Amino acid sequence: MTQYVADPATPFTETTIESVLLDADLFVKYSSPERAFDLLRDAIDRSPRSIGLREKMRDICVRQKNLNEAARQCLALVSLYIGREDFDLAYDRLQEAKLLDPRISVAPGLEAIRRARRPEFAAAPKTSQVVRTDLTFAGNLAYVSIFDAVQVIESSRMTGLLVVKSDLHLANVSFNEGRIVDAECNGHNGVAAFRMIVEIGNGTFEFSTSDHEFPVVINVPNNTNFLLDVLTELDHERAEKHGLRDVSGELQ
Image 1: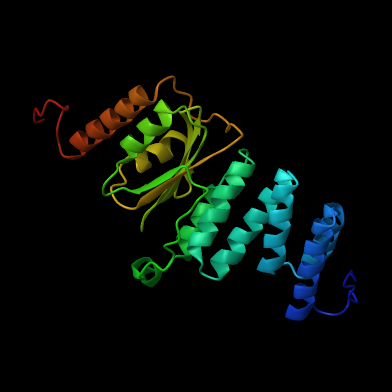
Image 2: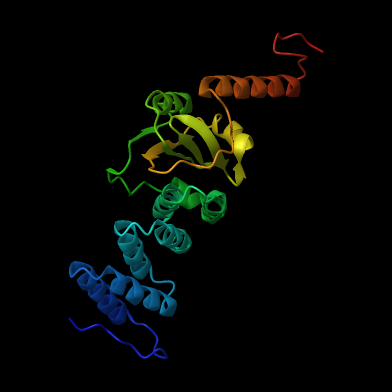
């Protein structure tokens, strides 16, 4: 095996990148993942916008349990995929970063995707219909509500991330052993974000399990009571907005 060595002053070409990727695969095959890591790190320094290099680094780091570096590469890939207007892959890498490192806030990434989306992309026919095998379950909010999804996660005591996608909302809810512990929606987080999420009536959701628990931002002993409290508050606010004194319907 001959490792590709380039002059640092010479810009990387597609041929150079292909050579690096091939050498990285060979290093891994022959039980030298640390050499593959060093090779890819140097190559990424030379060509930081190469999706191929970063995807290969991410893959190797996941397999070698270098989760912090894998999460860092996922976040970098989010920006690159947004630049290519490949929002589905941007979502996937953002979700993966959160699963790899629960300390990461995905709010900035969600906001970046929201700002980058254009109406023609939201209305365009869906071309990505590949079944995801890494998901625990997924669904369409026209048929399965947020409340139903939360109940499934709670009853199964699962730890993971529920990602909600619609034309107007980019959101996720974090669960530790079935209990809601955080939420993010369109740049907001915590309870304020969850209040927005429960009113989403269309779009899709995906739930992926995680080996790591998430930081507790929303501290509630019971999901059902929390949901009822949020819905009651929203009802009161709507009643006040429409000139009602309280939910009993008495006019002011």
